Amino acid sequence: MANLTIVANIQARAERIELVKAELQKLIEITRAEDGCIQYDLH
Image (cartoon, rainbow, N blue to C red):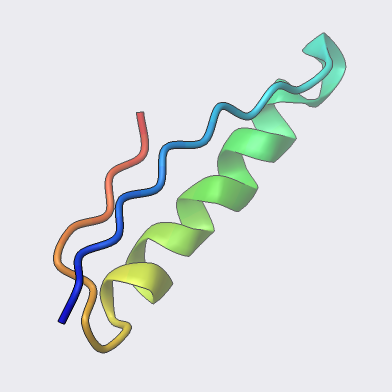
């Protein structure tokens, strides 16, 4: 199996930063539960 690394830089308007952050945090547990997920970090 090949490894895949994805690095994304997400930019949000100042008034949407907290909304975007909250939505991205919802993805952590869901993504880590996917078959084959070795590591998922949000910085």
